[in-house]
Every structure is written in C-alpha cells, then in structure tokens.
Length: 96
Image 1 (tube, rainbow, N blue to C red):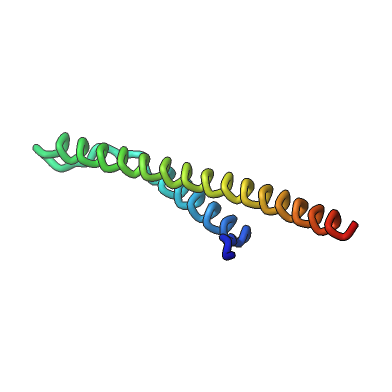
Image 2 (cartoon, rainbow, N blue to C red):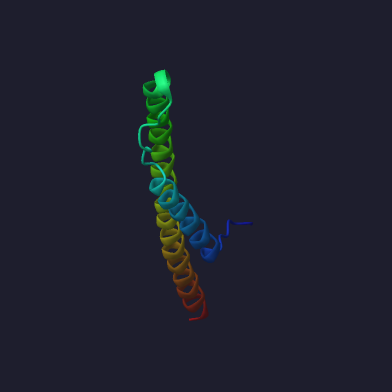
C-alpha cells in the first residue's frame, strides 16, 4: 500500500514564499499620484487604480494561500504524529 508523504520543510517554504509574495505585492498595490498626461490624465489614473486594485486582490490571494498551506502543514504534522502513535500502540499490543 502506498501513501502520501509531505515534507513539512517544503510546505513551510511554500507558505513563507506565498506570504512573502503577498506582502511584496500588497506594498506595491497603492496607486501612484495622478499622472500628468494632459487630457487623458483621468483615464490613465482610473486605469492605474484598477490595476492596483487587481494587484491588491492577487496579494490577498497569495497571502491566503500561504495561510492555507501553513494550516495544512500543521494538520499534516498532527495527523502524521497521531498515526505514528497509533502504529506504535498496535505494535505494542501485538507483542503482549
């Protein structure tokens, strides 16, 4: 029987990378000052506002994914530990 095995350190690295990307993107999501583009200044400003909003959404998603991976890592480690204990108990009971 084969199982699924995850490396907690890899999960930690992935979670940290996603959180870091979210933080970096969030820092750059603030709209710049209104550009001096003549007649199209308002249009350019509105476009930049929409782009920054999109970046903010991606940042929130990356951070949320990082949190989900971290929670999954904790759950995996907890279940892995519990199953190891169950296996140890079963082996001890079989020996009696």
